[in-house]
Length: 121
Length: 114
Image: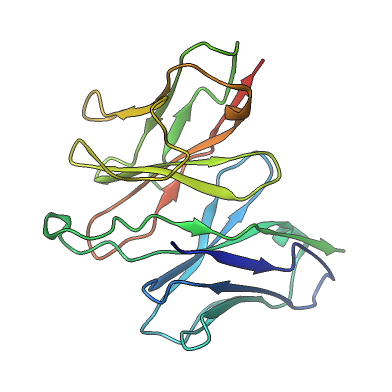
């Protein structure tokens, strides 16, 4: 089955600096890679995702890159702010098919172990 | 914005007792999931559910676990005879079947087994 490795486990940066979190996956059939942010006492919240037909995706200060050949993907946060402090999880899965009646995976997520990001003011 | 809601937020139960965790997925979603997170560890997949059937389940989801959609809005996870190692955060998630939409998570139920 799929295995997702995530590094580093903790990351401390100064406000305004960039933060990079890296993940690798093992199953070449995985084609959907979301990133979730988890604040204390809350559930994981999707912040960005990327599909295997795309190499990079940006959303304001957040970007994700995907290298399918090497089976790794990364989260980049620029101009970090104290409110970015949280635990970030990468995940991998199959995309669910457009019509599930034709079978296939429902897109169960396999998560990495998480990165605790601390942004110091 | 529509949310996945879970109740209760915290459940304390004696070992060996049955517990039911409840979830209300986003109303137009058809794929449902349960995940577990032991304190300080990663989120682990338990089970996925579609069209009133289990689609996939992990090794964690043994005979002590069951899921049900008792009506048009609720999705429940039952643990028949709880063990100490069942203590964890349990997250429900749902997604739309259209175009592989992302999974939306609830804020979880913290299950404490004494």
